Length: 116
Length: 111
Image 1 (tube, rainbow over the protein chains, first blue to last red):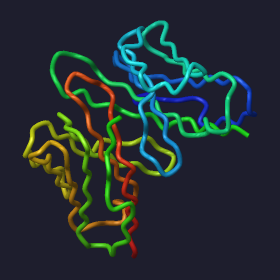
Image 2 (cartoon, one colour):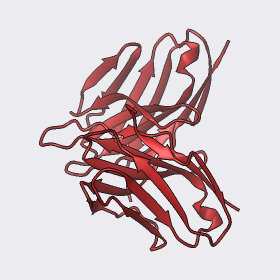
Image 3 (spheres, rainbow over the protein chains, first blue to last red):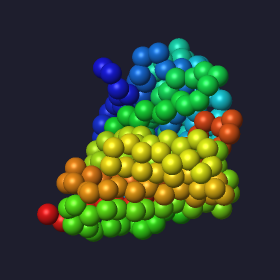
């Protein structure tokens, strides 16, 4: 597809379970971002990948959250021992990178995670 | 961390009216952006601002990058029903990739 895609669109899990959220960026985009959006709030940055490596993971709230991008394309956000407070919409974005601005971030539709 | 204060939180207007919303920060940003989000979708970029004092238009939308680099505003002229949605400001620091978002302004248009 032409845009960023995220799967699943909705995920309901029980407290304490493990979940994986997937992001397929726009083809050719080397930068990939994860944000978390709680109800009634703006998106909050979690982690940024440049290629396969995490260039900035300063937004990950704790060590239960981990993300990978092994081949520099698809990324998976992994949440261990989920808590009710993890319930939110998880947004993925991608962009070109280069020496010149701008580098617009294109967002996917998000995965709505509900932890019961 | 850096925070953006966006106001108003919500607006209820009549079709055809002009809209104005703003965003302030406790610290400087090098880039200001305005996004629109509709239900079930991710934010979509409307306007990007790269220089203090810059005034940029995109159709009926106009945004300005404040001189102090700590604020920005977005105006929508002659609102139409498809303008309904949540508008977010976002700031970006020089050399950083992450965006810092405001809390959003929910725009509702009464027919």
